[in-house]
Image 1 (cartoon, rainbow over the protein chains, first blue to last red):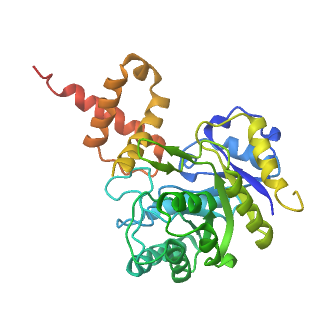
Image 2: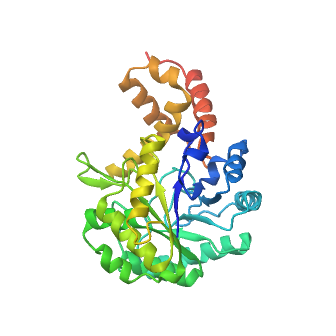
Image 3: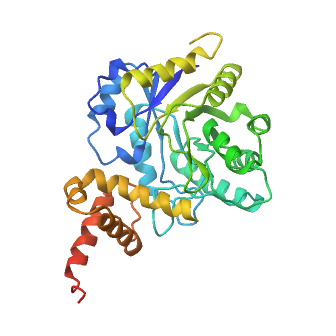
Length: 263
Length: 71
């Protein structure tokens, strides 16, 4: 069980050895067409890199690009990672919107999306993880956790469990408490977990998954208890208003301190 | 829904602000916002690569400059 960090372009000039992350996560869409010296510098520090994508559009309708998947597979080989995840959401068909739109929580949609995930996995030749996303409005007969479980079971894929998203959805919609959600998840399918901060936006009267602040104490406690119980890694996402090295290290240290081992 | 409209705008504005700081600085806030809103409404992009939004933006600007000015 270890604590990693989502790598952001704001960190491009930082001394990587100053970051206490045990592993890094990068967005493949930001690196496939770019110079990847920085990624190899990361690997040189002895820490692994995992891929977490944003544009696969698993919830969409349009065909998933085989060329893009081939490029992701090549990047995985180059970096020596078996971890590739994307979101259980739609990001646009004719129009890639670089945002995550909810999939209706229905059995029919779970079947349809699971088929798409299976096609992705068949082409990549490995299992991917799908991440539960925040949603600001949605419909469907299933609780979110059951939708996620059903998709993972039908697709035979894994789950990247974002604890912050569970909390944000609970605060916004009040439909499924985090404890109830966690109790319905098959943790043998979870590869690792994400944590991040969120903020209340008075304009929309909603909590928004901003990744722009530290992790809420209760969220951190739930996450690290689950991490310890199920021997899972945790990744800190701080994507906007990225603070300095000391603050990020402090945040990772706080997470580690919440386990009895203090790893 | 307003929050999703806002997020689509933010996704475009983060990339374009970072890529065209001089243009952003030269425009009043309202003009920048209207420019981006029009870009989002007029453009369809399908690249997996977020950074390539700048290619679409430059094509949009070239096309926009070809159009006759309103009286």
